[in-house]
Image (cartoon, rainbow over all chains, first blue to last red; front, side, top):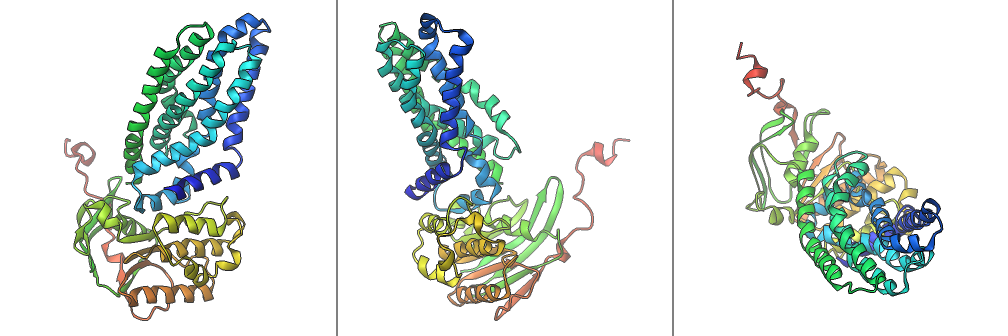
Length: 218
Length: 218
């Protein structure tokens, strides 16, 4: 299990287009917003939580389509299926590695970008907390989507169509928790709902993804 | 301890790939699977590995029926046309990963056997086709499982390595293992048996069950 995690991290860091690309994308999308919306600080502060969350969501989507596809193309998936490790565990480890390489850098970078969008001071802690608790759900839901589209050549777009609607609940409550904190209100109700959603996703999606992978293999 | 196929058949997309194959491999035996291109050799090996479902028939390995997927698959190892190698990782990292996943121990010995020690630190994308193949076959050797399913194992190997690999198969069989090898060349094994696929290739496509397509409705 550790071996698989280390391998996944190595692969993500060595092949360009892994960790760095998602982060760069996040940076640019968020930086583009002030150019489109205008430099009015009040407007920017108002939309900052939503923009940061949507940016994080799109950035984590970028590297998802390669999650199982490369393994399927070079025959690794066949051998992994024959290994003593259950496919459910394989999916969970891969999704966790995906979060470590795309979700975690976003969590770390988000406060800096919040500054450029004039995010109110009271919201920073909750921006970090909500992204930290919410982005794992994005990776795990994405893993299920990636497993379903693994047999589709150039399935990246199809994957986005499948997965983005499922991101909506996390987006709603994650952005809500941040904006509640920005308004000086109690963000806990939205935050706990989102955290619960993440736990639910982590518990369930490995099974769905493993089922999809088995169907693809046979 | 033996592999037993009983009237095995396989359908893919409404076409019979092979029909009514019965075969028994006893311990210590290496069986060469021969037949022209498209006879279904690769499909047969994948069916035995559990990567393609059989339409009919039974497979038992050491009295474990193939419906007990995990127990069945934990006794075999499979090498297909693809080497399951990650180009970004070095030769040693690739092999280490598989060894850890399959709980293997005799890693250094295998690296020597397949002359991988001298290229251990080379990234796999810089290896030649033959070197990649050697790495792919080394994975078979480290997993130490009784049944080896090999699909054209000697493609792009030089004569010396082919001889070394044949010796490895012989040693595996001498230790009570089994090998089922699809190949077109003479491997130089000590006592191989040959199984011809040609006879099982049906001349026409599978019987059509749809009355509309068959034309019965007119």
